[in-house]
Length: 406
Ligand SMILES: NC(=O)c1ccc[n+]([C@@H]2O[C@H](COP(=O)([O-])OP(=O)(O)OC[C@H]3O[C@@H](n4cnc5c(N)ncnc54)[C@H](O)[C@@H]3O)[C@@H](O)[C@H]2O)c1
Ligand SMILES: [Fe+2]
Image: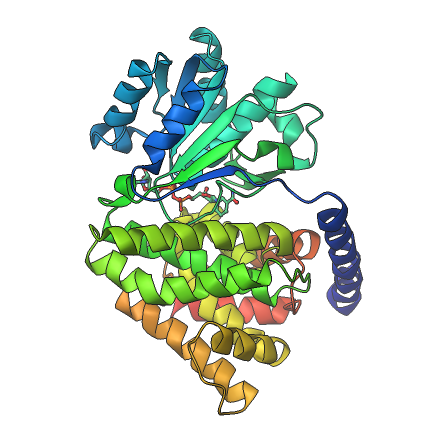
């Protein structure tokens, strides 16, 4: 199918997807992890682990975090609490299937009984794939897709060290295949048993990663709020996450060791994750995932650059929702009309992007790649997200051309 008939078919398919997603979230809501919060809460989570039957733990992390010495206090504490610890520190950004498999080998080799993820979204996602595979005894490739796990995961705990993905509460794990294409494992069984939102391990996060991951939070909250799946209990979380990002990201960026700003960003990340887990994402993620696959642009950075373009291209359909969101998040007082309020909100996002030094273009986008990027983005959006407006091939192409900045 080509052209208009294909776009019409996609619109129908997306409407059906939206209904199914909505029903699944009502009849099978994801569970929430037990939450430890505040300075020192990562240590409370270690105490929690020692109170379980897990006496031999695999900590999955990335080499940078070990080199920065961030993990050591928790290893020492766990060992004092008589939990023996092995460390697998080879998780890279956009984790690959081969790293997941290597971590599984390490788990078996050290006869572990559970996993603690200590890292950003990449580490938490890889750990989800590891624990689901161990619990289900099937190759991780068989878990790709929606709700493929039959059995529960191996015991799994998470300490996020970025305030970005919200992976510590979502049902999703994003793993990269051989060709860098992202594969999604979506399963409520992947959610950790317990998690700790602790500012301590986040204090030294470099400012550019703080910016990228912080705008990922904003993107999650905005895409969840404007999605066509509604959830009255999760809407306030999306609103609060937007408010927290505007109030705290500049401070976390400029004064990284500010505990309060870091803690508020960690909470924003968790709440935005909770919101999008129930209401879904949208075209910003659909496009940004392609840009990561084609050019290895970091996840948060790609979203941050794409966000204002997608909001602008979808403007007519989403202006009322953006206006409501900006008033609810305290960014506007509602004295002007909805279109003006929505435009002001997009302008405030652009100002925040400038403040945290996010560029507005991705010059390495090649003109000859654009048709494949557009095809991949539309396929992802049509089949996975309750988008408020289904951007056409022409509109997506236009966004990619603007992103080139020529
Ligand atoms: N599961 C979900 O729901 C979900 C949602 C959105 C994105 N994702 C996925 O998450 C991944 C991105 O995760 P991310 O944005 O958190 O980045 P990341 O985990 O890839 O980390 C980025 C970099 O920051 C470093 N780092 C992490 N914490 C640090 C700290 N405290 N101090 C110093 N350096 C630190 C890491 O080692 C890495 O080099 C992508 O693969 C994306 O597709 C998952
Ligand atoms: Fe994201």
